[in-house]
Amino acid sequence: MNGAAKGAIIGGVFLAMLGGAGYGVYALVGDAGGGEGTSQSAPGPSAPAKGTGPVSDKDAAQTAKAFLAAWASGDARAAADLTNNPGAAQDAVGDYKTAAGVSEAVITPGAQTGATVAYSVAAEVTFAGVTKPLAYESKLTVVRGNTTGLPLVDWQPEVIHPQLQKGDRLRGGTPASPPVQAVDRNGKELSAEKYPSLRPVLDKLRTAYGEKLGGKGGAELWIQPAAQDAPRRSLLTLVEGTPGRIETVLDADVQEAAEKAVLKFPQASVVAVQPSTGDVLAIADHRGDGFPASISGARAPGSTMKIVTSAMLLDRGLVSADKVAECPAEAYWEGRRFTNLKGFKLDDEPFSTSFAQSCNTAFIKQIKPVNDINALPKEAREVFGIGVEWKVGVPTVDGKVPEATGPAAAAAYIGQGQVQMNPLTMASITATARTGMFRQPVVVKASLDGRQLAKAGRTMKPSVTAQLVRMMKLTATGGTARGAMAAVAGSDKGAKTGSAEVDGAQNPDSWFTGFSGDVAAAAMVEGGGHGADAAGPIVAAVLNAG
Image (cartoon, rainbow, N blue to C red; front, side, top):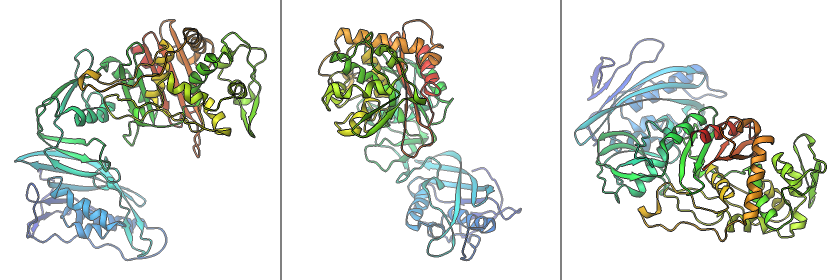
């Protein structure tokens, strides 16, 4: 370990405290690989006494100082007693050395903002005689204990490491799943370093196929998730294993464009699919929590769902692209009022215009003529494959269009209510609309492991496909998607916008889906507002790369 400071050896434990404003560097030296030693822990700074009211900056500083010193000295019990969740804290601090293999760590307190204290950790992890450095930054917040009145560290998993979530554990050693070397459809390597959004996907591929492909494990530090079926997340490689090579159907160029596109907005996700094959070309997310909402999310898709609703209405002959459809400013169904944005309405315009301008009431007015509350779920399942189990090659959350009654059934027509989608399922819906045939999306070919892909009950009628594609093209050139799709090269392009109201959210989710040639893409930006504003530019950038 780098000598960040020199201090006295106390009972076999090195504790250095630099001068200044009461903060310093705390360093722990222990036996590599864990094991209980016989030395005593170095005494840390004393914490303040109990009190009432908000925690003062001074109390927060003293409590943080005491906690960090106890953690650095390896005294899990003392550190835990300075938190508001001693049981979880003691396990995590104890695991830091014994289970994660942290042989040395220098913890340096940093800036304080009120009761929140930042700090940096410069650690070394040792396993099988190999030592590698691990550096990161985190923070803690001091709160008043509910029953004790003491200033205590508000225990959160990220106190130990910023990537830890509830129930996660740090672990070191030889993982059960050997590494994989993933390549795209053209043989280009797909690494998490170059394509950060793919980290969850690569971890899942490793869990599913690492051993099957002949890989051999090395040694590393990883995050063991709480959920048994969730993939472990590698943090540091100590000894390189022998990876198994896995061929995906992703496209490195499209993936790179997707990675850049989602960075423009927080909480953004996008997926691109090849309509002619079902191959997933790109998966990208830009989120602070690391959650792959692109393939695992479940949110109301708003008006992008009108692709499915339109297919159902066209299929039943209740509307046609050129037939006039009523689009009033408001419509009612079983006591619930549905409106268009800013009182928008159309007079004597064809259904294609209602689709292109995203007229909600034009769809709500069709519920009574349909006279079948299960019509939409049936169309979603039989034609678009929504509601059957998908086997993509990595775990995904499939779309849901459940049977519903009353206002919830009406809301489903415009992508609200109980309908749930993610960019993967919406990209697939667009791909199906583009070709008239559902092809289950895949990240790796089914031939790799012999899994059976999902199939839809029937293909779309050619007349329905032709009208649906024509309406999506009109939306891209003269409807709500015109602004975003103007950036997409070529004339063979179509789209649909959407915004979805989410309970308690200040702004609606932004949805956008579109196609250009043989590429379909869908994006979602949580709280992003109207579909064309945030999700639209993301999809346009991805389509241009396809």
